[in-house]
Image (cartoon, rainbow, N blue to C red; front, side):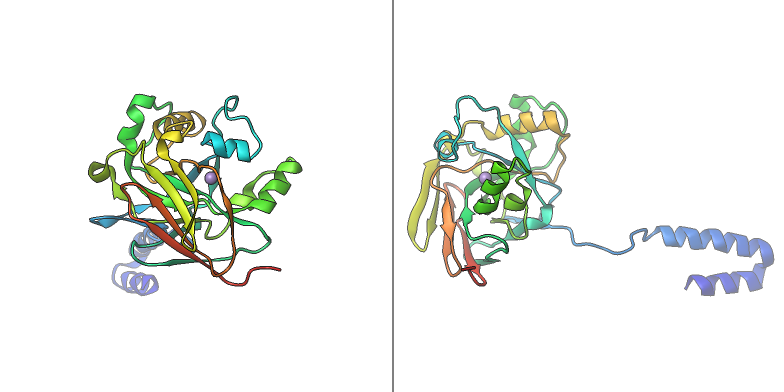
Length: 267
Ligand code: MN
């Protein structure tokens, strides 16, 4: 099309027209500057046809005292710390349906961690705790899936956790329930069952650092933006799943999240 324009313009208006057409060709090229396109991960919003585009996934570590103890640390002495998962680790599961994730490669100890997930519609730096929840557009139920054996091995070797946390399909979650419908969730049951048996069972009020405090702390390390997601930590009694297991995550006020593990379990 650009070549055709150039030829036609050159024929009708001569050399000056050719120059103009060349400039036009550059402008046309600039419309699509990417070598290729990649999908934007999105999360649906309950009651809204617009979807939430995912920028970054932040996760707080050891944010319930009993879970910190089961991971071998002292919950009273630890400042909050965070890690990330890639945005495309999200697997969206609609309420009433069963999502599917594959048993991942490289692990023989694939763990669930039920977590309240907060979604940011705005950001900033050095956000005060009392302003932080103004940035939260809503919440969902998520599971911070973890290759526990790899995480532990990397901890022992003083290497990054990433291979244990930031892998494909490691962030299944339900749709966003808007905060203007459910409020800002600070208390209520958080639980996870496997094949109908309750494994994790706690209350959001047992968080060491609230969602507002997490946002304030994170915004001192990185500027936060609309599209950022925060996994707010898991209570105690994390544990393994194998292929064929079905997990149901539950948080009071939000739709349940049902996820089945597929693919072969390594022996
Ligand atoms: Mn976690």
